[in-house]
Length: 281
Image 1 (cartoon, rainbow, N blue to C red):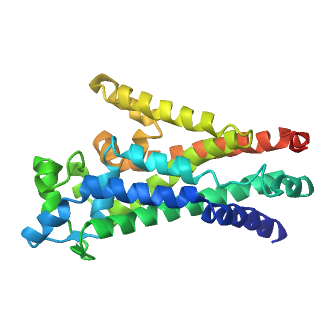
Image 2: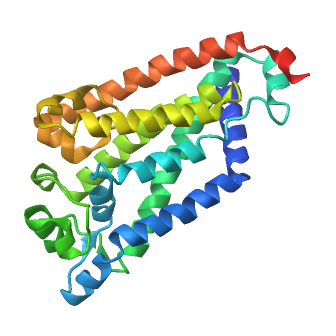
């Protein structure tokens, strides 16, 4: 119990630091601006056609677009920098504490911050729908048209979902998308924390950006479509997963991310063991 309290304390300490950071609020403003530009037109369509979308529909549409996932990735890169190590005396606290518990605390921190960021996105999508939202667990006519003729028809340019997603209920698709988004966010956040421990967060951001761009180029080729099975970014796209191998691909993605996060945790723990606190002097 004492160990769990220490892990929880480390995680909460990082969350409090994030709440005091201007990065979080800049990310929310940037996300709101981009979402309004990308999906804001759908509210007019819904009003004209007296249609309503499930609370999760716009969220699923947005995160089913490989291009627009970069907005989510940028947000994660910015908000996963609140992990304390070389600031506010956290490193001195670590000298007397347990570094494994500190690393576990950062996993808890990433879980909380990525889940919170996704909930903020969900709220921003709710606002973008202009109040034309329902909790009825059925896809709107707008989503069916978007799948058949493209999102631009309903005011969602470059946004859309696959036929496989429509075979699920909006609630199931939304919760699955939320799970995948949290997992890919935690995986990306672990990279930022590992580099942040060395005061080289810029390198972590550069690696993530290069990895995403390489994934975008490689998996965009029809002959290399199966490469998505090894791509964290590709596996976070529910439309792409269902196109690969249905629900089996979704289960594979969850296992893949859990293994990836476990490997990153081991790297994080080993890195924390080797940090030279003399650099603080």
